[in-house]
Length: 342
Ligand SMILES: [Zn+2]
Image (cartoon, rainbow, N blue to C red; front, side, top):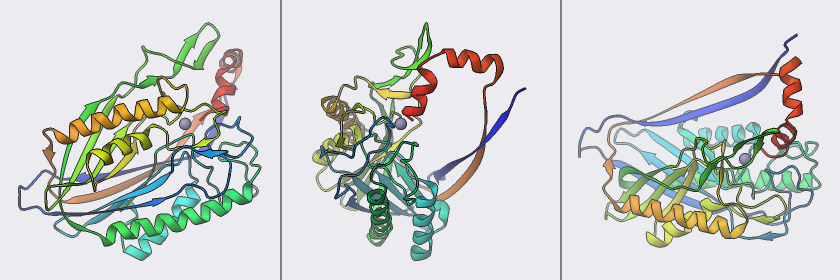
């Protein structure tokens, strides 16, 4: 008998839409802000359930960075990017509700985006809960304390960006960087989390450049579709992984500008190589250089009105039973690894 397991999985898709350009008469305003979100005390990291100890060092600080936009008609929106792996819906729902009330924004106009670094702290408001991936949390109180402080910072940094709206122009382009590697490796024992050079991966690098009235870059928003898993589970250092190093390259190249990272659809992709911190910097340097090349090149102007829409979907997952389940169980490594590493 086939059993269907309904998993309350919420897929939230938020899109910022710019209509076709009406020409040079369209004026944008943009504002940026940033806040450090590195934990003050050692707390468990998210992303690898095999970890049993809190972090031991800070390799590179974590940030929440925001970009607020307003079109000529007064429509506003704010993007909040975070160097975090996973965040519970109840945490983001509370943050979004506070920003809605404080800033009089539509909920859909608030994007709370995670980089998905596996070297960021676990986030939870529930002391009784294990870590976000189900592992025991040896310092749940520290995680809850961190999460409450994080919520305050996110509300504040969204407000700061919205309060700093100034005339701006928006242009975009796209490049390519090659370290994203499909991680579904087919072996004699089944599919494992490994390296599959022939598998699909999105290696495009979308770039949005935001210039101030003086023509200088104020913000560079870029994306890449790849997990932040350069560091292995036994590495207990806090780090934004490759996106953080890429931001450093971009902010050095564009003095005074803020670089923001948004993760693409990289659930099947790991960085390659991914042997440790050195590779995080190497991959980040490569990505940052490509973003700078694109941002310095010929870009397409963005005009029109600003609109935001959001959609939440409940996904149904089918539980494997009978022969299908038996075959999967024989594929040792796949199921267990899927539970250990999200
Ligand atoms: Zn992951």
